[in-house]
Amino acid sequence: MRMQNLTPTQIVAELDKYVVGQKEAKRSVAVALRNRYRRSRLSEELRNEVTPKNILMIGPTGVGKTEIARRIAKLTGAPFIKVEATKYTEVGYVGRDVDSMVRDLVETSVRMVKIERLQEASVRVDDLVNERLLEALVPNPNINRFRNPLDVLYYGNPDKNARVPDEVVRQREQLRPDLLAGRLESRVVEIEMDGPPAPALEMIPGMVAENLGNLQDMLESFAQRRKKHRKLKVSEARKLLAQEEAQKLIDMDDVVREAIRRAEESGIIFIDEFDKIAVQSGGSGGFVSREGVQRDILPIVEGSTVITKHGPVKTDYMLFIAAGAFHMAKPSDLIPELQGRFPIRVELDSLTADDFERILTEPEHALLTQYTALLETEGIEVRFTPDAVRTLAEFATEVNANTENIGARRLHTLVERVLGDLLFAAPDIGETEVVITPEYVREKLGRIAQNRDLSQYIL
Figure 1 (tube, rainbow, N blue to C red):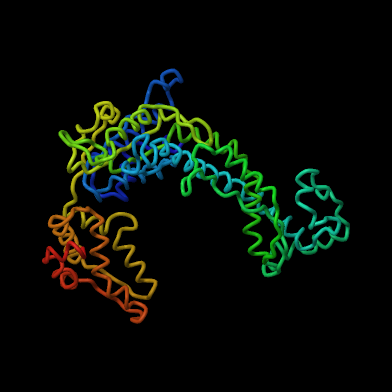
Figure 2 (cartoon, helix red, strand yellow):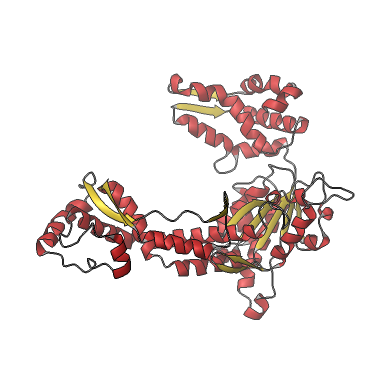
């Protein structure tokens, strides 16, 4: 439904708020997203034949590859994860298997749907929590709170339908207005809550058995039968009871079904450092079979079924966005089958001084906006002159050219260096206005930027 109201032009305009430049990359992802909506409107027979056109982004670090992928996921409300290709190893080696990226996407989707269901149930939760707090404030004398939990487990809870005396009902109704008005928040009550969940099942210390989800769920459900009593203030008990009641209102089977549907139909997996698993022509050993990792990733990208703790999940219609600098390797160094699964190639441009200048000021919550807001909390109003912003941008371009090119991430280091003294002394200065000029920027950065050896370690 979100995509119905988003044209490619609108998607690019939204991305422009956060990412400077990279017009071709934005157009490519905008078309890929719109095609998903177009596919949803096809007949079922034709829809099953239309698969996403995966994207390969090529460009140095810090130019906006990850940010573009992350923003389109937020824009559409799609399940999204970012993984590094270097995490994975060929089957038979110690390391993560490629199927785990799909499992991680499903877990992300489950969390998203669960949060939505919790928000929908919030009104009912408030009423249920108030009832439980009233029961704790005026307990029912006919309930044995110290009954053996094993008896309850095997024979049921005879207290569940215990009669509530009329006097208790009257006292609770007398307290209800005060509770709803928040006048009892500091009173201490004793509440009964579910016990802690079972610890994660491990086959090898430190390694969770990802495929034993059903057994893990069984252990957790058993642990939830154990109850414990806690004495808390009403304000603290309210938060804990709200979480517990919300969990009871959620149909987890429905949550899982919807989460799997979203992961299969609209999930986005962003694979960074894709160039690191490419095998250079004429290259030799020393690496854990990079080509093997490519061959393991291939069926996931082509479309296969991955077994997760929530059930089988198909990857046929997931959108895969791969990214890498490809300084040492080339896209053609990937195995031909994998190359064919990323038909859309986008080369992102290196950032210029003009780009850095725009990055510092134009995007929503731009870097300079963040720092000035931080210092405003101490009563210091910081203002950068246009020439100072330009000087910062030129320093970033120079340092990136002379050392490692890390793109826009260089700006974080430079701004922190320029404002470092002010950030340290801000609590002692008091309310004042500080104007950052080009001379001030050069004073803080000039010597380091000119000394190439020193800038490698500091900048």
